Length: 156
Length: 177
Image 1 (cartoon, one colour):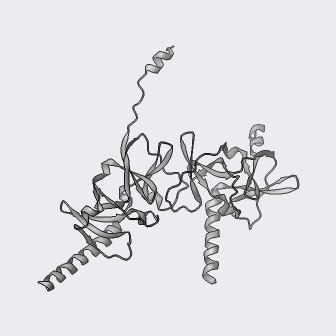
Image 2 (spheres, helix red, strand yellow; image 1 turned 30 degrees about the horizontal axis):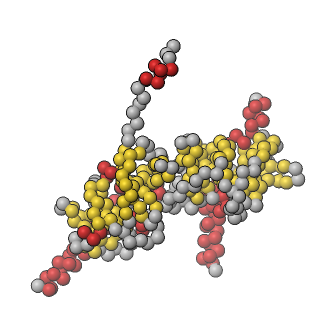
Image 3 (cartoon, chains in turn brown, yellow; image 1 turned 60 degrees about the vertical axis):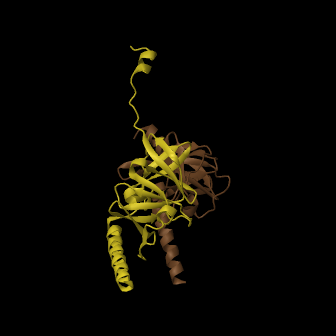
């Protein structure tokens, strides 16, 4: 494996989403977009808050707070646009962030068995252990959470 | 080597424009291909021509209208898209499908240069509702898919309900006579 590929695989962007500090593999990040208009229209994909337009492309925005369980902050007006692999096709997805991002290098450790699908692993940064996000797993995590909530409501 | 002027003079591939009708339902703007719309009428003008049908499984369709020997099922667009209840004032009668659409108002007609595919992250019913998304005057507008308002199964159910309603009306007329 070349040094460049190795360096890319061990690079992460650290971001703040609500009160969660998380990491995303730097190789997946397309751009940090400035505050732009969030366009909304009727749909039934509950995880999607709307779409933004970046460089002529329409990019769906995940409401990450639904999965991470934290309230979206009013300071989250920037969007981190990330690449996502859906089967054979690749797609862009954005998540609202507060604009403060930093790069970190490190080796991702595999996630514990009980971690949800949106966690690809953990990254040690200083004394902290941050979740490394797997955007492909957001939908599965949200479905599992919604199913668990529905089950709890049915029991009560 | 070609000069900049020569390069600029190269014929650019002409973008095919599509004319759409922009309409509102519950303050949400939608677009539909103008070619898909046969007629736009006010709900008042069709009040006498509409027949009521009851199909509890399909609450978005409460009426039929007959136009040119065809029966059209009138779909409440607000209910179809899960929007707040409004008082629709217009009916868009579609051209190639036996469906008509109750909408609040028409905004205007416009030419769009592209319909962007719905991003793959959208996985719900919207994949059936929309042909894609248009970007017009800094707004992203869903372009509706005319066939998405009623599925073939829904047409079958409505045909049965409509036939039952017609025979009921025939019996009532006979009794009155």
